[in-house]
Length: 170
Ligand code: HEC
Ligand code: HEC
Ligand code: HEC
Ligand code: HEC
Ligand code: HEC
Image (cartoon, rainbow, N blue to C red):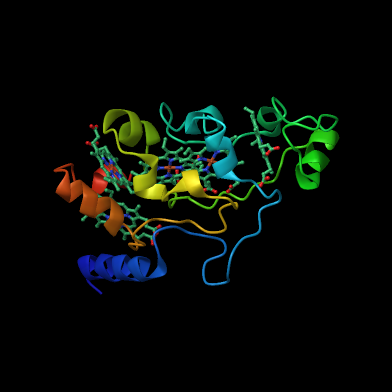
C-alpha cells in the first residue's frame, strides 16, 4: 500500500474510533472511586485552576491530590460534609486512584497553556459544561462529539492556526 494511502486509512480508522483513547470505550462507563461533584465546589466559589493547577499555565491540567481535598474536608468535622468514600482515603492518608479519561495519543502534543492562557479558549469549549456536573466524569466528554483529530483540525482551520502535521505530531 502506498504510504499516503496507509496514512489516510489510519486517520479514517482513528476518526471512527473516537478522539481519545478511553479505557471505557465501547464498554459503558468508568466508575470513579469517590462520588465527586463539580457543581457544589464551583457554587462554593472555587476556580478550576485551584484544583487543576496546570490548566492555565502548564501542559497538563492535572488531577488534584488528596491533600488538596484535606484543606477543607476533615473526617471529624461536620462541614463541609465528607462522604464515606472520601473519608476512607483521608483517614488512610492515601491518594484517590482517579482514572484519567481525557488523554491524547503519545505522539500528539497538546498544551493547555497554549489554548487556555494564550488563545483564551474556555474549558467548556472542549470539556462541556463542567460547572453543572454533579457526578464524576465517566467518559471523555466533548460537546459536539467530533471524532478523531477533526476537532483539533477543524478549529485550527477556523482560527487560521497551523494544520501542519508536525505541529501536533512530534
Ligand atoms: C475550598 C474547600 C473545599 C475543597 C478544597 C474541597 N471541597 Fe469538597 N466540598 C466543599 C463544600 C463547601 C462542599 C459542600 C458541602 C456541604 O454541602 O455540606 C463539598 C462537598 C463535597 C462532596 C459531597 C458532594 C455532594 O454531592 O454532596 C464531595 C464528595 C467532595 N466535596 C469531594 C471533594 C474532593 C474529592 C476534593 C479534593 C479533590 C474536595 N472535595 C475539595 C468544599 C471543598
Ligand atoms: C482546546 C481544547 C481544550 C481546552 C480549552 C481545555 N482542555 Fe483540558 N484537555 C484537553 C485535551 C486534548 C486533554 C488531553 C490532554 C493530554 O492527553 O495530554 C485534556 C485533559 C484535561 C484534564 C485531564 C488531566 C490532564 O492533566 O490532562 C483535565 C483535568 C483538564 N483537561 C481540565 C481543563 C480545564 C480546567 C480547562 C480550562 C482551564 C481545560 N481543560 C481546557 C483539551 C482542552
Ligand atoms: C475541588 C477541586 C476541583 C475543582 C475546583 C474543579 N475540579 Fe475538575 N476534577 C476534580 C476531580 C477530583 C476530578 C476527578 C473526578 C471526576 O471526574 O469528577 C476532576 C475531573 C475533571 C475533568 C476530567 C479529567 C479526566 O480526564 O479524567 C475535567 C475535564 C475537569 N475536571 C474540568 C474542570 C473544570 C473545567 C473546572 C472548573 C469549572 C473544574 N474541573 C474544577 C476536581 C476539581
Ligand atoms: C477551539 C479551538 C481549538 C481546538 C479545539 C484546538 N486548538 Fe490548538 N490552537 C488553537 C489556537 C487559537 C491556537 C493558537 C494559540 C496561540 O495564540 O499561540 C492553537 C495552537 C496550537 C498549537 C501550537 C501551534 C504552533 O503554532 O506551533 C498546537 C500544537 C495545538 N494547538 C494542538 C492542538 C491539538 C493537538 C488539539 C486537539 C487535541 C487542538 N490543538 C485543539 C485553537 C484550538
Ligand atoms: C491540530 C492538531 C493535529 C494536526 C495538525 C494533525 N493531527 Fe493527526 N492527530 C491529532 C490527534 C489529536 C490525533 C489522535 C486522535 C485520537 O486519539 O483519536 C491524531 C491522530 C493521527 C493519526 C492516527 C494515529 C494513531 O495512533 O492511530 C494519524 C495517522 C495522523 N493523525 C496523521 C496526521 C497527518 C498526516 C497530518 C497532516 C496532514 C495530521 N495528522 C495533522 C492531531 C493533529
